[in-house]
Image (cartoon, rainbow, N blue to C red):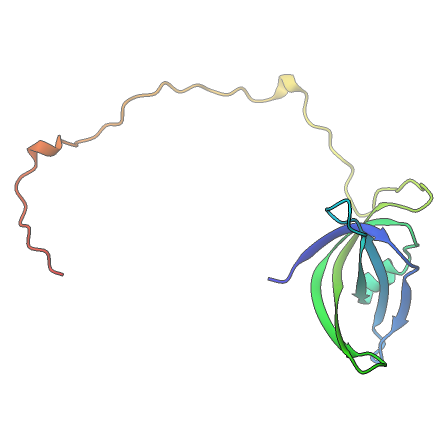
Length: 153
């Protein structure tokens, strides 16, 4: 399974274009921190298609996002003749965590209103069941009848 989840910051303004078939395509660079303090931040190219591309196209530099998608490796030849491989993330979903400039996020319109949990007094009490020894017809090992010890293999 090829799946990745990344949390980071939009490093440049997303560029919304169309493919030759008319499908929306957006690409931008996502910057995310290294796990080691002495290493620089990582950057990865992010690509979205279709409706996701239109939604991601509204992001701005500095937005904090979580992306869900898959990794794809692309290889190309540089002008000096050397071959290079680069990873890019093809996203399925983008969750905006924080807008650049501190703009508060409003909840999505398609989510139902949140239902508060019931008060503690209304929770169902747990019932204690007394433990009983299991009913078995087992006999001690010493009382077993002799077995034929011919093993077929």
